[in-house]
Amino acid sequence: MSNFFSLYNEFVSGLEPPPNFHAWSAIGAISALVGKKCYIPYAQFTVFPNLYIVLVGTAGTRKTTAMDTARSIVESVENVPMAPDSATRESLIDSMSKNKVIAELHGKDISYWQASAFVSELEQFLGGRHINQSMVGFLTAIWDRNIFKERTRRGGEVIIHNPYFSMVGCCTPNWMNDKLKQDVVSDGFTRRTIFCLEHELACMNPWPKSKPNHFEMLSRLTAEAQRIFQVRGGFDVTKEAFDLFCNRYLHMRDEAKNFSPKLENYFSSKHILVLKTAICLSAGVDSSRLIDSTIMSTAFKFLDYTERNLDNIFSGVGRNELKAYADEVLRQLNKNPGQTKADLMRLSFDNLKSVEFDEIIEYLTKTNQITVQPGQTVQDLPVFRATEVKKLLPAENLLELASQLRPSQERKMEDSAAFEVARHLAPATVQHLTDLAERKARTGNGVLLKGKQSPSSGEFQTS
Image 1 (cartoon, helix red, strand yellow):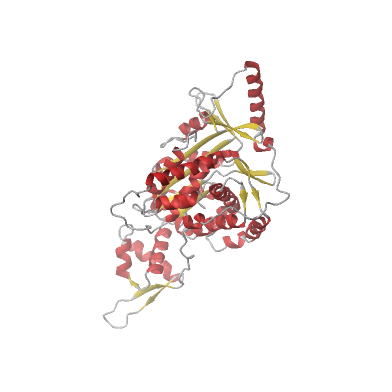
Image 2 (cartoon, one colour):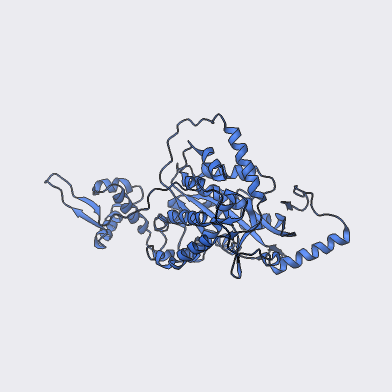
């Protein structure tokens, strides 16, 4: 039985981007498709599937190729509100304020304002050479806010009720190390973002060719995307999924101890990222809105495997800019033990002066992270080895893992009840909808044409 992920996996097979770039791009596509009409009731809160996903790789790892595949699938579905390709904070707010979505939920109309971004150069999106703190602040605030207010330079006010912003972006490790400083990390943007770092291509394909059934596969994939776009309502969990989630949650603080202290903020939000990912995985499998133990386990695996490179991604965050290069030397020694000083210098000379390289070697030696072994003969040069070879998780193809998901045989928890639509919305939005209903009753005219965007209002109808 095919699902969105198995079709996606078949569609991108033979392409060069790392499979996990495709996997997270597919999750990002679903995040854009389902919008704020899907959710999980979570105590007094509500978890929506809006995700910030960043593909991190050096030039040539085909980040943009993977992201563009997901974007093209989203754009094949009519009425998914998209953000501008290149946006300032002001233009993004203006775009969201015009992208009103109306959907029927539990027999009532709900509305929210959406923008979904697919950003080939995250550096430019966040301000270019100098991070735009106001843009980062906006993305941080909009992630879980029910209502957003912005005073304009002209003295007016922009109000966005129930904002929903999702993003798939691309950047390089060097940009992360050079520009993403401690203040950005501590402000909360990074704990709301999933960073997927990959080094190796899936394959080398010098002359990609279209498959004989290319258009048939694309048609099936876009039909699945259309199905996902129609999914709406609360997602239930099974007893098995609930127990798994609770067990992992109770051990999350212990997991965080295996990482740098600078990542503590990320682990404080990991359980929410897992639930958001689980919604997307479930919607990709079928329209039952059920999260079973297999889907919950897969959501954890998506995050667990991506975390294996988190320390490397944030190694340059802090006052000492050489820390990132020290980590790269260690990575090289983990990959190829027993390298001479000349070997390591050749790999890093583009970025390091000789005195900086010597400082790194001294730091790694004094902290017992590397050892120097003398040569066997006078002619042999000393070689460096990592004191403790870092054990990485076994290679995991997350897209293949998601492709194996099937409709659940587990039953939802008995006390997992559907949730009132009023709780889905901010109080100000409930009042706004009441006023809208009264205005429609007075005029006797509808606001939207079914299935079409109103050219004057920018509203979207999803039912």
